[in-house]
Length: 192
Image (cartoon, rainbow, N blue to C red; front, side, top):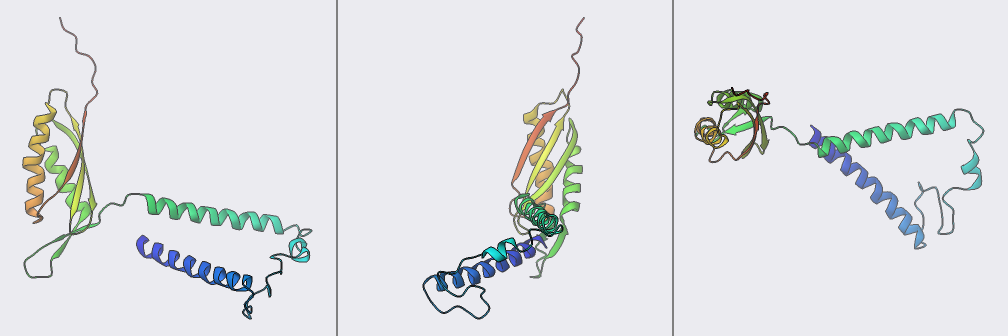
């Protein structure tokens, strides 16, 4: 949905800027002004003294202007955050062999892969996030390792067991993974 909203808003802003900019440019080159345009010649000012000072004495004017600008700022910030934020993959396309395929829910795939990763010896907790495209997913895996575990062994077990099983069960040609390993914080052991 965000992709559609993004495209519609970008298209509308582009059309408005193109229409206004084209009208200003045409009038600046002394072309006849369109009937809907408020300024009629290249020497016409953008705001006359009367237009600029019309609402100065009204007590409601500045609060309305500030509120409208605040709403526009909040909408622009929401849009920026929504566009920049990395999205979680909602579904993975699985080839069923009949030409149509099936959609596997992304959360279900993540939960199963996290469960398989937690079964690896020495993994205390696993978190998985799907990224990429529906037909070419990738994973981000965070593993919290017990203090006694060799990180290389845990990584090897994860790739040969959990990730390989997920790749074959979803019938994917590849399943790239970015794995972050962290150790469990623990107190110092006393040697006697």
